[in-house]
Length: 371
Image (cartoon, rainbow, N blue to C red):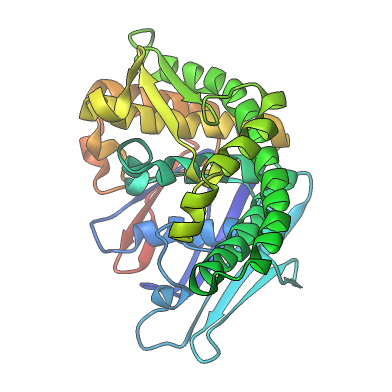
């Protein structure tokens, strides 16, 4: 899949920006606060209907205006025009595919698959378990509509069950315990399916991250992701384990009025040469692992979807030494089209470029094609 062009109206600093992209590497160059990352953010909006910075839609509206509009042309076997519009007056976001309005964001996820390598990725390896769950869920959700549906259903079940636990704590009404059993059955059913998908995913994904890491670091280090559900790694044992854990923590959940058991509390451990990265990894190892995760995600999704994802890299090269920067630049040639923001191209003599790559200069929301 290729993003042929994009148009931004009142999107952050970009009042009226139109860009036709290269089908290979697109280097977007500009100082801090000039609007280069906003181009990546607009692309991400088209692919997911939301910002990768977790900011609100209203924050993306240009100062002194009341709306933003971003539109892009994607080319695969056919061409599609995606558009996202947001109005401050109505506080409403509208999504269109080929001028037909789409009412659910979940209907867009996976249609234009996207991989992002951004500053906040350090949370994946250095942050809390929820950051690692978020990464895993985002990859599987884009690759599997089935997983996305189960994930959304599971989230609704957690919300309902949490409400019920809260009511029981307040009232001690024994009738609520019967309702809890019904929600337990739904929780186990949906939760067990999530776990089984995650077990299968990690088994497959380890091969992709091993290959990605080898491209960047050759054979100097061996990465691995480990995962289990309360000690269980066999899919056929998941449901039984889930039921047992729920029963053992029943009284504690009732006292705390909190969902304590389930895949929403899972941990994924990232390791280098058998040692847990979060505890023992250097800054260089963390950054390399983060980069490898995104390249692994790209090639995993490409194979599963039979569609090439959009690849976005935000100001990553400035954090890398010349060896890693050169290796990653070379690896990008296997990706195809990619969008890479940088503060100054002159500092990156180790990057691999060719005549089909595009250099786009951004200054105060204005863009200029350099080559």
